[in-house]
Image 1 (cartoon, helix red, strand yellow):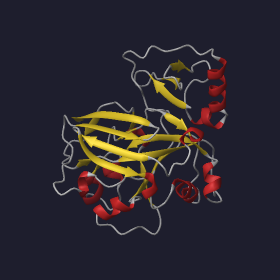
Image 2 (cartoon, rainbow, N blue to C red):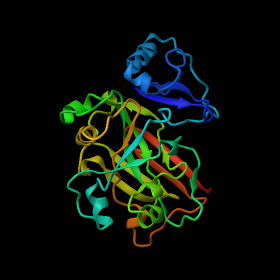
Image 3 (cartoon, rainbow, N blue to C red):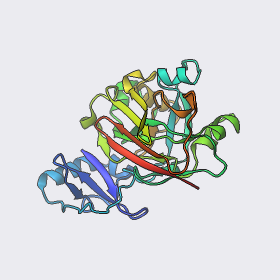
Length: 283
């Protein structure tokens, strides 16, 4: 099932994309797609409502698509989690997941404008597989237990400002938490529909030039391991988002370092999860 939120910022309504491409209004089932919905059997209720055939169809013309979950409680990120990306940045393969946090307020819709921060000269792109948590999780006993708490997956664009991230502070937060720096969506695709999260291709292009073309099988730490690992150190709650890392091809690792400028357009996709497109502008 593909769940999404549509409408102007702050006025989104819950919806579902059917297998035949129709967009149905879920407002009669839930007020929003959030942690409460995910933890209380909301996905099953939505599926039952679609099957019953009683949900009204929405007219998509001019309708904005927002992030597929309302503002998460937290966005947890894993850095250097693809072998080829670690190599291009000159970093050693990490023995444990490299974990950092991203301001949940960075989450925006998949087609929203992204702002290059004032003073930025190194704004960079990163296509990632996002995990959305569906059940409260603490001290999970391995990858199988981790799979049971995952509601689904989405495309995440972990936009980064490399000078802020790597040169201004020993921690990465400054370069990761700038305004609009985490487009998410277009859909939250339920875990049962995605299947094996380690069998997905990821792609990203800038102004029509392919920059990233990776595969989740190249992850150093797979999804199940990441979720179980994080649960040893923090409580994961329904609606939380985990960004699982990016493959090679970021501007930081390219010979000419072609960082993003106002007017640039970035397009990204992940197998089975749809696509995103953002135009960058000056903050």
